[in-house]
Amino acid sequence: MVTPLSTSQCRKPTGQRPGGNQKEATDWFRVCAFNGVGEACAKHLQKGDGIFVEGRLQVRQYDSKQNGKEVSVEIIPSTVAVPGFRARGGSRASNPR
Image 1 (cartoon, rainbow, N blue to C red):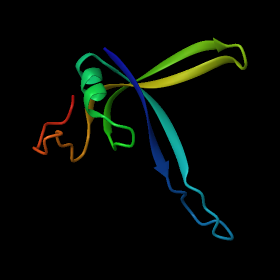
Image 2: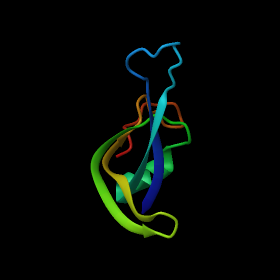
Image 3: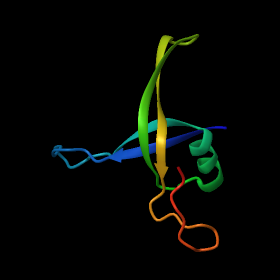
Image 4: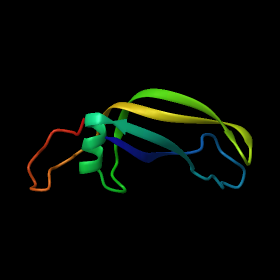
């Protein structure tokens, strides 16, 4: 089973800007979970869940009709953990992996 998902990380700006107008920046990451990790993600994750992803990066190059050559970076997880994850029955469960 392959489970594609996206996750984001918010970065607060460093340093001070004149006038104090600082915006948070959000980076989005594509995650492509396979086999047991993918099954656990599909079964247990819901939109908005905070997750910890550990794995490797996979870089792909492809030709786009709009922009020519494009580069895509995906995370291929070996572990996906949900801090504070609890099974639906309320008992403590192990993190999906």
